[in-house]
View 1 (cartoon, rainbow, N blue to C red):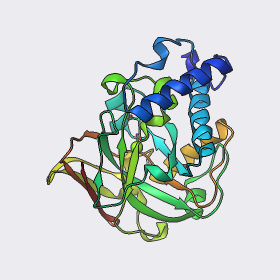
View 2: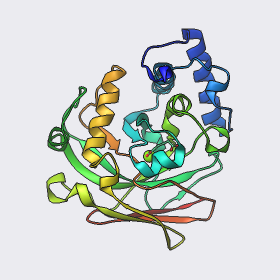
View 3: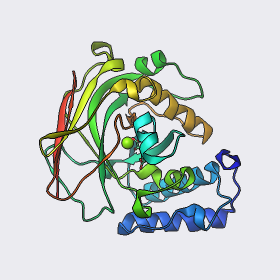
View 4: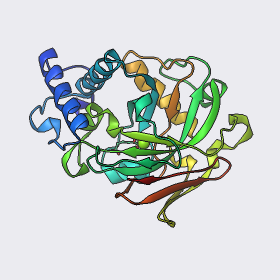
Length: 269
Ligand code: OOG
Ligand code: MG
């Protein structure tokens, strides 16, 4: 597929227009058609140009970036979404919601939740081929997280270019449980059960994300390298949904119970 290239095919004016569309859809929580319907020539490089333009606009408006996330790093996620290329998305401080709080849904289109292992880094990471060991050496601690994703595309259906432009469906994230040193837990084999309203609805192992969540972080850094970015020390990085994402409604309570990392939960409002 020639659209998988990081080469740009669209003009700067097209990128600005697509960024306007995504920004409006995110701000108004209003679903839009896939971007490739109007721009079939759009490449992966164009999609990241839109994502980075959105990031620059929002940081320019005073919003603060805390890190990045991996998208579509597990087979469960790839199968569910029909997109088989891992992606990245940026994370802003104002996407965060506290554990045990009520996370509003009136400003979201069709939220879904997924459980993830999150990393906080203590050294810069950059380059196309970091090892798992290099990622772990640069890790300050890991924490359990639930990401609330929200595609801005109708029916939660998209292709690679559209979802990348839409910041990989980033919307909200909640952390909790226990912060652990990477050396004190076996990150390769952490089991997790995702409960909705007290019933288990999905379960899996941290091995599901790229074989090891630290490998998923290396993948994030590789994509960042391809788009001319690096991961600064002190970054918060989510390594990708372990299981398929679960749709949620106002009133639902969700809880992710991780081996070794404790649990994180909240209610949807
Ligand atoms: C894309 C977002 C992917 C993950 O953890 O895989 C993501 C989507 O599924 O809408 O955040
Ligand atoms: Mg995710």
